[in-house]
Picture 1: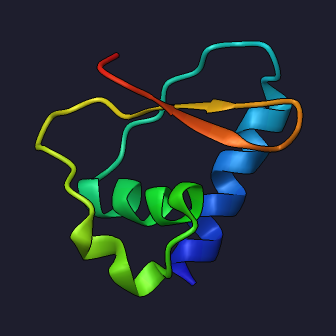
Picture 2: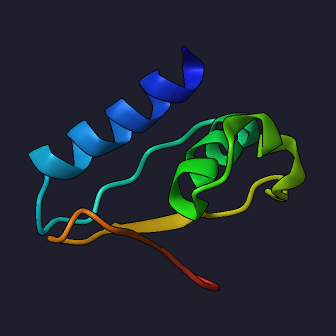
Length: 73
């Protein structure tokens, strides 16, 4: 359920703010779960994705519905 809520929430924000930059703040586990969607990995592998404490993860939602993780933002 957390996986669905996370991904649906991010997609809804992206659609509501198309063409804008927005910031959301959350815990590393939620970011890990979102990244499983981006990387096409099973959600049960979320703990294999490293998200350093107090880091930034930047996702770019593209018009073709793909999502890109921007490096070293």
